[in-house]
Image (cartoon, rainbow, N blue to C red):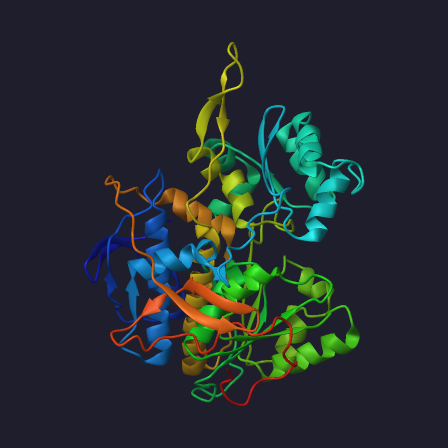
Length: 469
């Protein structure tokens, strides 16, 4: 569905992405001003429209939940927040970026995008290609040679079967005609469940500092919970100790949160997580469909233990379609959906050969950041809905559905111009940080992160009694 377009506080044609939430829950969020230029990245897709529209949806929902009238969306902050990792500096040093085995590799009939920034994904990629860790001194070269002899979809299939993460580059028509592309197109951008029955007395569920249990990683989920923390939520992020988050990601996405480690395969840790859920208001999860249920945190158990719990979740490919249980990341969805093809360019393979399209990428990981904004918008709206009806509902967002939305947006004709990014500085246990300013702004700059990222994994598995720095 293509959203309606209108004027939002001086910027014309910003997509209305809150409408689907409000329609399902019967909510009318207040208007929020949007200031600054409408176009700055340019390119073949309206990435700015997706960024501004998702930020506006989150801001309107935040204003509805908090009752604040000073929340605004500024284009410079949106541009900075959506490209946050590229602006991050830790004691003056830039983040490392993608690992050597993450990127586009040429196959025998096109290109494939791999994601091997996490050690377990690198191991899976090597296994899929028959490459042991000690095979050579040039792992990237070995992967390049192995993939070069395979058709792109065969390489995709082998990598996923081994538990890795990869996606062949497809054209937009190839994607839209595929079973997974059709499933993504049939999925609502924000799939909202208002809840079947009231489990609480109307008006009894209000907690001005809602407790949010964060079981997400990388960018999209942590973007959602960072926004919730920005406006006062007590966010406790829990990661598995055997799969730690990359430090750069933590320092970019965990402002205002506490972080802890717990292995959900351990019955004692799982029991403690259920206790935290019983005391929480919101559970945000980025686990693939069925993964939490396999760990004993299925929907029925959570409903019994935590009837007040609003549950929101995200994944790469959505809840239906042949890839619904596969691993995925923003870069892989770009590759599969045709976005990488649109941002690519023709490059001749040889003097007598037909051109082969060289892949490109969005200027920022907009699918991740937009998904996080939209999930935050759904979360605040569901908290209002729970307060008014006593029903604890849920919502789901997938990167594939966000990609479908981006591909459907009309593209402005003007090229735009570079925009000045809003940056801030703060101290952390891991060093002095230069980082993007919060997504939202206010007239007196009263909207600020409660505290910088803390030492990763160093907090206890408890809810805080008061705001902590």
